[in-house]
Image 1 (cartoon, rainbow, N blue to C red):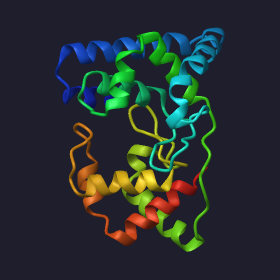
Image 2 (cartoon, rainbow, N blue to C red):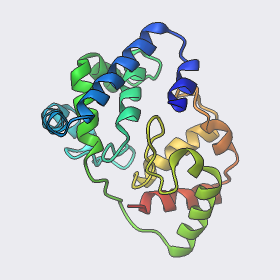
Image 3 (cartoon, rainbow, N blue to C red):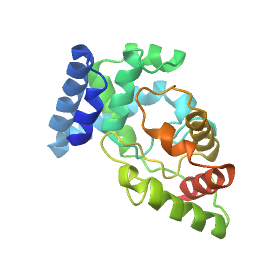
Length: 207
């Protein structure tokens, strides 16, 4: 709840907040009863066919520069849907897709992907993973969790493709404001190339 309040402080438009809260209410209602959850996941599986060309049928991306959606926090996915739909986050394909999805579609898809298993791309050298793990616990775990599984509005980083993680951190490090009001600029700016490589190796190899 604190994370949601923190986020909404930066998006004062009442329409955005109302839409997001509506999605969270739908999510909570469907998650409260097993039969409703299972029905929503099945509907999400069918509707998620529009996502499979980039993110894979089960949410494990087909391209290394595209993020996995499998095992992602459903609230995080819903938040991103709303950012794309409101044009606060810009991507031609995702913005158009978000516009064409109903509220029920978004919640069902988010639930479906959240229940899929994320698959790491490859393993990394033990010493690099150890260095990256220490760095992660020091600088990232407070928001993304000890296992990098994320939660609520914080994304899962574990098992993400290395190329996607590296590109994302590079953009933040260069202070490219491509995601609205993210606190990541300052954190990424503190990473030199060696630390960035270690962090990416650690996160991409996590299960």
